[in-house]
Image (cartoon, rainbow, N blue to C red; front, side, top):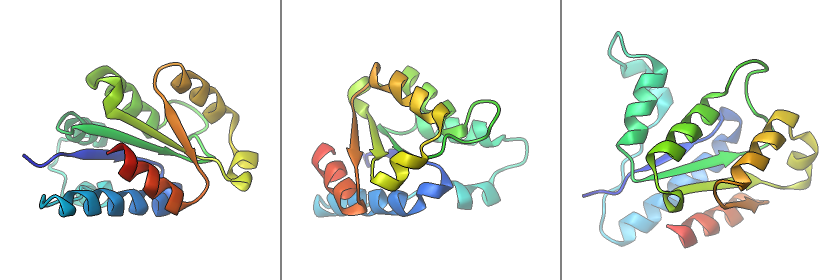
Length: 148
């Protein structure tokens, strides 16, 4: 069985997301396991009619073995709950805490720009799971490889 990693992030963290995908691919390929990526951008074009984006993401999350969240400076929309927050809540309900990996970009620029809503959410996350900070994509890649 191929392990599945659900990577959750905002589009603003695309570089970090690609880095995590590379780390996972390298780890699994070293063990002779084929790794396939599932990307929302591609899946949203192939989505069967009648399926909502939340429904598709929920299905993919439930079919995963590990939930990995990458956070930067922004929370998401000014009103309501962000997609990444919804995914985290579902993962927190579906997974054991050791299968929830949260990485927070903590370089000086990102920390200065961090939105208040995200700061509050991070305080809550810290009470539920352990998260790790990173300052560069290389550091993020090392953290992911170490944990997986």
